[in-house]
Length: 166
Image (tube, rainbow, N blue to C red; front, side, top):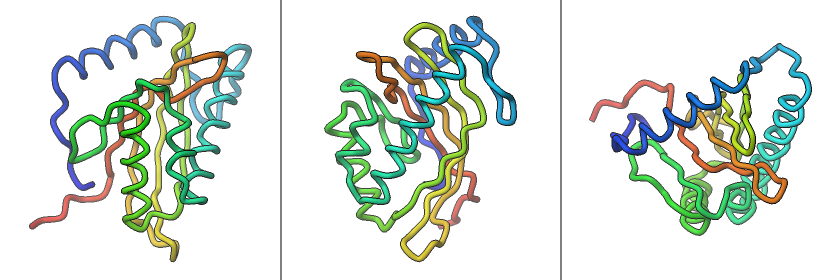
C-alpha cells in the first residue's frame, strides 16, 4: 500500500461527475461544523455505518465489513485493480485481516448529500494487533441509499506513508 495504481479514465470521470453533482447540490459539512437537517441525518448514518465497518475489523469478520457495501459496490485499493461486487470485497477485506490488520480508525472530515447519493472524505489509520500503525492515509467514499440504508458504493483510499524504495 505504498503507491497508487492508475485508475482508468472512465472510472475517474465517473467519480468526478458524482462529486460535481453532489457539490452543486449543497455545501459540504466539514469537521467541527454542526450539520443541519438532512445532512446531519446523512452524516449520522455514515458514521453509524463506519462504526459497523470498524466493528467488523475488530471482530475479524470480513462478511460484516462487506455488508456495509452495496451489492454492486466497487473499491479502488492502492496497488491493485478495482474490486467489484460485495463477494469480491469480502475476499479483499479478508486478505487485509489475514495480513495482520486488527483495528481501523476512521475520521470523517466532510460529508455532503444530494438525493440518494452522498460523499464522505476523511482519514484512516490501520493498526496491527500490537497497536502499531501499519498504514495511514486518506479516503473518499461515494455512499448510496438503498432501501433506506446508506451503504458504501464507491470506495477509494491511499496511503500517506512514504513510498518504500525497493
